[in-house]
Amino acid sequence: MSSAPAPPDHTPVSADKVIPYSFMVNYKEPIPTGFQAEFLAKIKTMCSQHSTAPTGEKLPGVTVEFNEIFKGFGGQFHPDVVAEMRKEERVEVIQDGLLEIFNFGPYVDQDTTSWALAEISKDLTMPFDPKPPQKFKYHRSSLAGEGITIWILDGGCNNVVNELDASRVAQEPWDSGAVIVHNTTDELVDLFSKGKVHGTNVAATAAGLTLGAAPKAKVRAIRLADPVGMLPTALHVSGALEYIVTEEKDPHLCVINCSWGVLSSKGFTRASIKRSIDAVVSKGFTFVAAAGNGEKKMVGGVEKMVGIEIQATTKNEISDSTNPKILFPASQNNVITVGALNKDHKPAEWSNFGTPVDIWAPGTEIPSVGSFSAGVTQGTSFAAPLVSGVIACILAEKARDEPGHKMTTQEVKTQLLDWGVKFSGNPTLLHNGRPLL
Image (cartoon, rainbow, N blue to C red; front, side):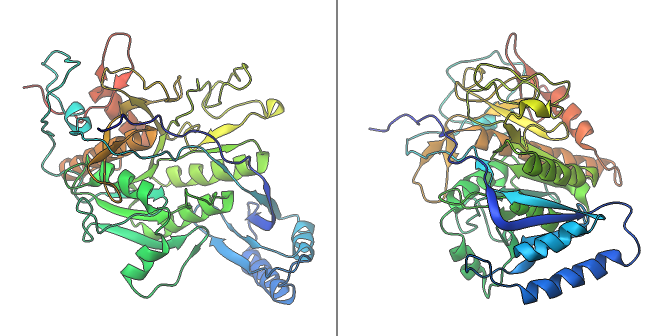
């Protein structure tokens, strides 16, 4: 017999911790002409002379250079190099830290038929039926996200499963802090074998051929971290975003999906991630994030911790004196935050909730692909890519109907809420704008 899906795993696996020798360096504005190149060259020279840590391990020095989301660089540095950097008043030296991963969940096998796509495209003239039929149809636009790129920041993606054809889906050669060298696509996929199950399912929910909300959109997958055993750092997140900005020619034809969250209680990691996301959104990218599976009420983007709600005027304005843990990226005002609904149009019992959640999408009994037979999974991880897919469809339609118009995140959010289905006493459910029949 098939078993019911277990609640998504939401147990944090580690508190954010300082990473020895790992730092990000930001140039303070205004940057004098020639200073950036001169200072970087000086530091690289010092790194070549101080390549072994006091504890014996090798230190690579500069591993990432930032020119798009901010001006600076990051890497692993000897204490003498760090001391020299801190003497320079025109730079800010930020200690890197592990981020507490929040959202990767388990997977179970269960005989099922997909319902989520039908739900977000249903005929709104029909009354709500708590017992939907066993066969569904997804009513979508003919463009289906064509011409739009959905970036999946996750644990990697397998583009050889039936839902994700290699002509539309690419695993990017970027891994946890740096571009990696690879000879073939197969070799690249092998390198990401541990963490790709979650990312593959996220990609299929966003843009799978039969399971995705935008089956004609292009997918570019970045391995931010391995959800099985490795935690991302602030440097990983910023480096991944720098890579995306460098690669994309038109940010307004892109969606960035983050089906994960990191809890940061440290000011240095909080500030660096916020700065990076702000910079990316300001360039025109639309950012979508899962609200998380913590059964928490989010007030101002902050968890309800130890029975105390941290009040805030916006998602990300909080009192540093309280030093709460903040869920990123979902806590940011300029990110579209997604909660998970069940089949009764109620928030799933494990989904985070509260005013920071912008919109809700089906998040239970979502068909799984990749390493699983016909089965399902659940979590805000899979509600978020449904929203990313619908946004890809919105952007594709806008590009066709109004060439040259560049939609902002706020315009996209307004469109989602205008199309969303409002049920009495329940949150706004994602809808793809199918006309009333």
